[in-house]
Amino acid sequence: MGVRILIVDDSALFRQGVRVMLETNADWEVCGEAVDGLDGIEKNRILTPDLVIMDLAMPGISGIEAASEILKEFPKVPILMLALDVPGQLVEDAQNVGIRAIVSKTSMHDLTDGIHALLRGECFAAPVM
Image (cartoon, rainbow, N blue to C red; front, side):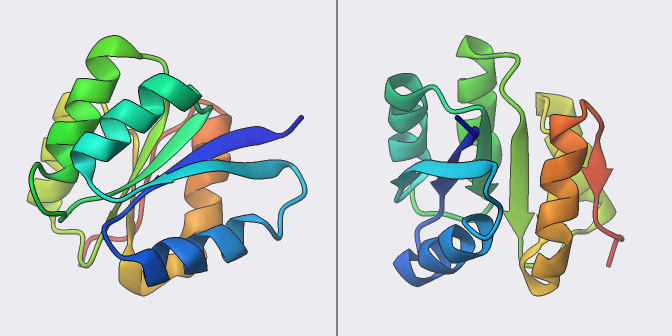
């Protein structure tokens, strides 16, 4: 059985694109999708994924708030944050709640590098824009 990944993003089209990208790796399995931060928190409880990919900007609570809640219950689950751009302040805010990887949605080629880094227990931040 491969690494089970939960995708949390309010765009169905984006989730589908991420799923297709992830499924090219035989060792990765998308175990579920969530439509917003609250749904992500609930699906994380139900599915207990090995890794979570979380959008920053979603309706309701932000990705950072949702990640913070997930990490309170599941402190060891690695979370990769996706954002349209990755300013230094976002990196700092994300690290403060325990998010260890951040990738810009405009640099999706960095997604697999970020996932590999998390699976090795490392941190990853795409170049600051």
